[in-house]
Image (tube, rainbow, N blue to C red; front, side, top):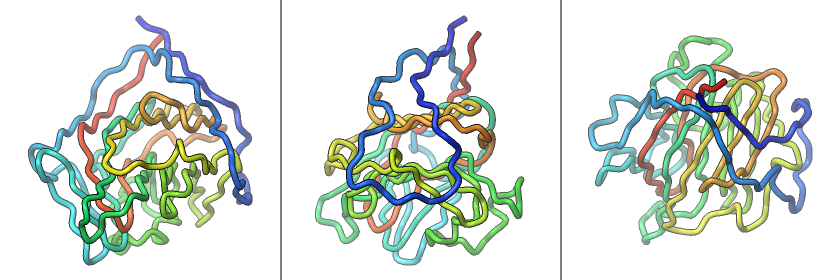
Length: 245
């Protein structure tokens, strides 16, 4: 049996919104070391259909499978939810590419995602609300973790903990502006998200971008790809159960 090892930084609980820093370094740039034993529990290589997903998208965009990938070509906002509720110690992994090939919605910005998302009004039925429709502000009432990677026209990368009442606070150390945490067009990134009790990590190509220790963690909920006004391709989605001594 393996022993899990994480590189993480203790942070105080997010209470109130803070002003973003003009420039900041990530919480940790140390590579992920040993995560211990892991068991693959969900997988989608996008070579079948979209039956594992729920698409919430504003008019004018499309979400479909193309060439063995999930192709999101979005006009005004889109969230693609994995239908299966997740819980416990998990790692989510996927590959993502921001497309810039002259298409109508091609724009290098907003490789975003939600995880451990729940609706306080419908804790066991995230999809009971049929009115969200992909509009970003309609997700404010949810409880969840969120990363906006290369958002705001590819100028910011931010981590937020939505508190369920419309609050979306961000700490200065979770508001990154350095170019190394932004996008290059047509470059495939491997994203890993670890949620193990209070240990929350977001990694890009094996490098820790965000580390957070949540004293009141969200330990179950849904995962969703989130984007707006761009062309995004996703592949090799996997969810692992983490375990160890």
